[in-house]
Length: 454
Image (cartoon, rainbow, N blue to C red; front, side):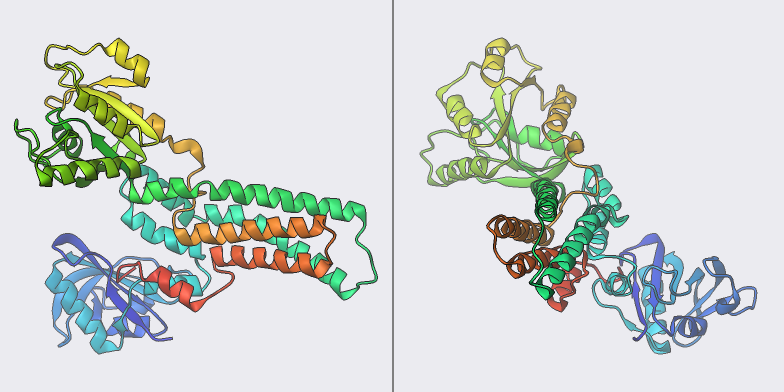
């Protein structure tokens, strides 16, 4: 295998930038581009020891004073000999250092190639490899916590006992198939059925976390609904902390959906500001109202915004009806800084949770954060044991379906080879989840998500 290199930090001005090298010629290549200040070659310094020296360009002239550290195989991220240079974060310095490494014999690493080598060398399974990019892309503390636990092997540790038990079961069925004259005793059959039932229950429970994982990664689709001029756009701006949407006293200012992400109560929300719901004569505004209703139908959460300084109108009732399309709803009585007209007690009887807020001065936003946190609690499944993408969910779903089929075959008195075929399908599906069953197209798709240098 050849030796690869890349800039592992962003190619923007920063205090520190890192060049990473991995492969069999790492130490020899890096000796050509780095001179320790103490005069000893880098290979003679202790592993994992930061060494101060000069990073050299292609012509052998110093381009930076940097720190170098080497990681001999197999005790490195990739499982190969690795070196990292911690430089000053000038893009010019990093680019020149990279070109010097190319000239010395390394090649440019592809997207995710360092992590792919870690997987191929047995340092990570597929769920851990996917957790690397999930951690890089995490937009909330909950998502980061789940990713770091998965990176530590939490999902693999949950699946491995099931995999091993099903593998043992397949071995038993092979014995039955090889010796067809021996009947399966009732006690053995009961035990096998029990094992299959427990495995199916465990996989169904794991599969139920997929929707939670999708919301962790992508954010909770949240439609902000209400009639014109109740303060929907002001609420969006208040939650974001900056003026994203145009706010005026003119009804119908927002004519299309405006989407942004914000962490509210520790939960990543994909906020969708919508046009005010009313009977609009203007064609463009009417299209915006239609999109508002469509957004409500696709949302996991609706934030219904009412104007507390004015009585309810027919347009408010239309917005309430639209908000009811979402599986979860919070009623926000905005403009609490003004004299109140709406009866909060009567509203609470209709909606349960009614939160007085003021998008103008921020009053009540802390209560909104608590309410959102209660709707999407972090403890629904242990961190690291949540399926975070469609590939993982598909593998678990196929394994659960194969186990269900095996149970039906066993209970129906089918021949052992029929039960064996379903059991092996379950084993193979779980193997795909962690990477025990290796498919080149599968691994290629996974690492295409990565950035260069990771």
